[in-house]
Length: 322
Image (cartoon, rainbow, N blue to C red; front, side, top):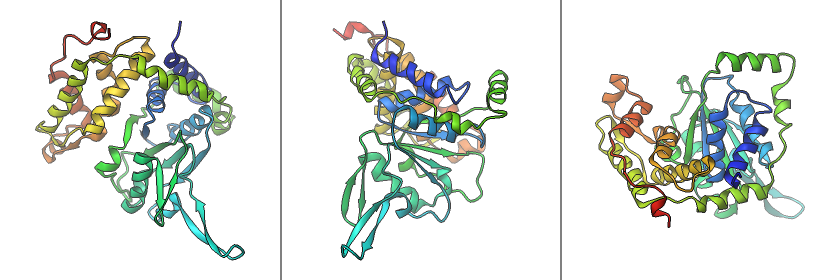
C-alpha cells in the first residue's frame, strides 16, 4: 500500500515523463522541493530540456505559469510589477508582474543584474512582494524555478550567496544517456516538445496537500538532526570552504531527507537519506576558498568529503519514534 508521498512522486514521474525522458532522479528532486515548498535552481548546458521541464511541471501541479527571460537590461519592476496611473479612476493601479504566478521560470537568471536578482529575495523567502510600500501576497503554491548555464561567463552575474541559499535544491541536468537521447530523437524528430509538455494532466491540490501532511508521519531522530548540524559545522571549518552551510541549509537537508524517507515508504529518516539528498542541497550553498579553485576542487568534491569524514550516528531508527 502506497502512502501519499509515494503517490504524489509516482504521479509526478508519470506526468512529467510525458514530455521529458531519462530524468527520473531529477523529477524525484523536484517532487521533494514541491512537497517542501522549496525553490529550484536547474543548472545545465543549453538544449537539455530545462525550460520544457519547468513548463510541464507547471501544468502537472495545475498552476499558472509565467516565464521571465534573464537579460542585462531586465529591471526589478519587470518582475514584481508597477503602479500605473489610471486617468478614468484618477488613481494609481497596481499592474502585477510575472512573479504573481504559481510557477515562475526565470530563464538564465545569472544574465540578470544584481539589482534585478535581488527583487526575488523577498518573494522567495516571505512569499510576498513589496511595491511602493505596499505588500502583495503571492499564491499559496508559489514556486521559483531558475535556470543557468554554468559554462557561460560573458555577460553573466554570479548569483550572490543570499540568493543561492534561498534555492532549496540545485539540480544539475546531465547530458542524457545514449538510450534516452535516442528516445528523445524518436519522439520529437517531427513533433514540438513544448506542445507535448502541455499534455500533462494536473495533479489534484488534495494530493499535494496530502503529501505535505504525510511528512509529519516520518520520524526524525535527534541524532539525525545532530548529524546534519555536524555536517554544517564541518563545512564551515573546511580548508577549501570560505562560507559553509547555513542554518537554512541544515533545515533544507533535514526536510529533504524526511521526504525522501517517506517516498521510500519508511517511517523514519536515516543518514543514508541525508547522504542521498545532500548533492541537491549542499554544493550550491558552499563558497569555495581561492585555494580550492586553484587546485580544481569543486563544491561536489567538498560535499562528498564532508559526507565521508563526518561521523554517522549509530541510532537513528524507529526505536526513537515511539
